[in-house]
Amino acid sequence: MKQDCVLCREDGGRIVWQGRQWRLVHADEAANAPFPAFYRLIWNRHVAEWSDLSVSERQQGMEAVTLVEQLLREHLRPTKINLATLGNVVPHLHWHVIARFDWDSHFPGPVWGGVQRPSPGARVAAVRAQLSALEQALAARLQQQFA
Image (cartoon, rainbow, N blue to C red; front, side, top):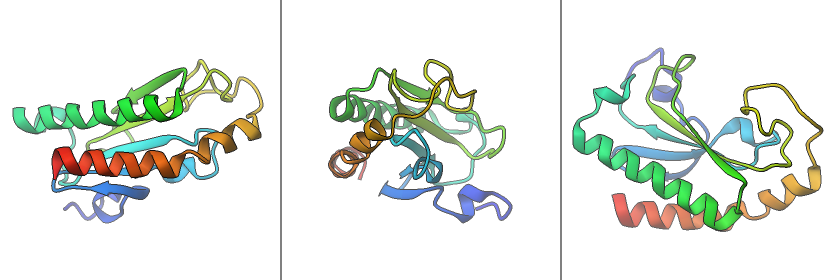
């Protein structure tokens, strides 16, 4: 644990599932943002870079990212899934897995980019209504595969 690291000190969002090596959270900024299905897969131990992991840890990480992507696609039918691991602001290894829709306020630009149009509240609410079932499925599958 690194004391000055926010992802070592805090969960990084609402925990959906936590295993020995990874945790999946619904990102805090998704709660009131126009991106209701914004998730982070966070490595529990403090490491800054993907190459800090062993080969088997990287394989497990990619399988976890893939599983989250697959379930987002299955449950929400988004236009696209955005995957990112940046770490410029928070240098603790984590993947952003974000369901994107062609109607979202920033599409086709990145979620961190400029607004393209107003966010359609009814569509955002419809996605939010599906998150409980999605997250139950995510937790069950992650537990089954990575417990």
